[in-house]
Length: 105
Image (tube, rainbow, N blue to C red; front, side, top):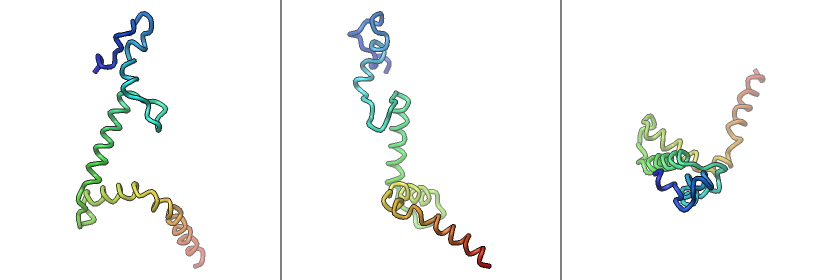
């Protein structure tokens, strides 16, 4: 992979950075959601995408105490951003309501 990153058309004496990394930079453009992009981040992103794909395709077990059910439920709750945003203050309102009931007694 090191050889794939090298730009042999540039002399290291003229531009060390371009000679060492020029081809990698051209073949791996900076994603729009990143300010820094390197090989390590690329590998991590690919691994996370693989994990996401595995979880997304898990069959949903019937028993809620299984690891598969918990993983799938957590994944779906994070992915369904519209529902999360629509109900984002509901848990806090419920807690405040419960705390208010403590003062009524």
